[in-house]
Length: 51
Image 1: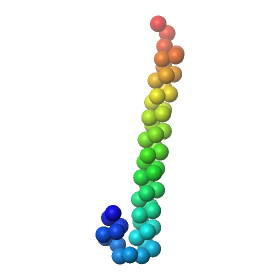
Image 2: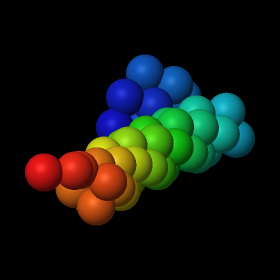
Image 3: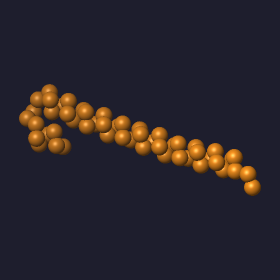
Image 4: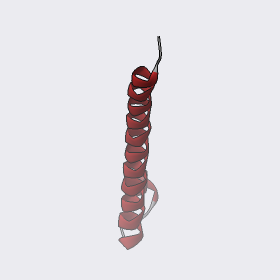
């Protein structure tokens, strides 16, 4: 949305929008890896817990 308003219509506008989408996608993947890691470590600690 910012690229649409700030940059005149050109290839640079499309490249900036693509860069934003790639950055957002990387953030989603990073978050997914974090949540999966927390879940896996929680299960691991439940299995290894000695009562």
